[in-house]
Length: 67
Image (cartoon, rainbow, N blue to C red; front, side, top):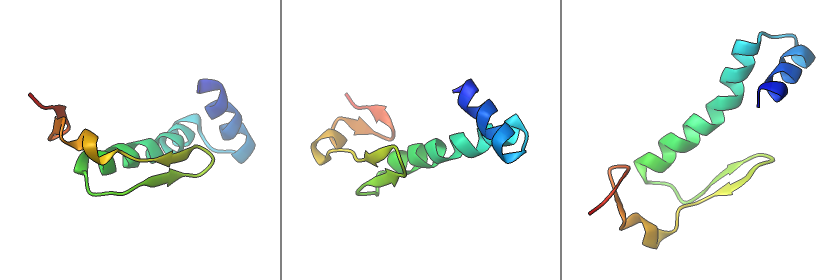
């Protein structure tokens, strides 16, 4: 991923730090939405559609594997 970040930073003329924040922000938003549990699906452009199957929710509580 470092190579991609360096290439994007060079291409758009911004720092590698800012580029990394931009690239990783979509994943942190995805994680937050999954942890909150009130979403049907989330599409990340050029990466795909992310969903959690309804029957899998019963195995997890508050973001941790239930007992």
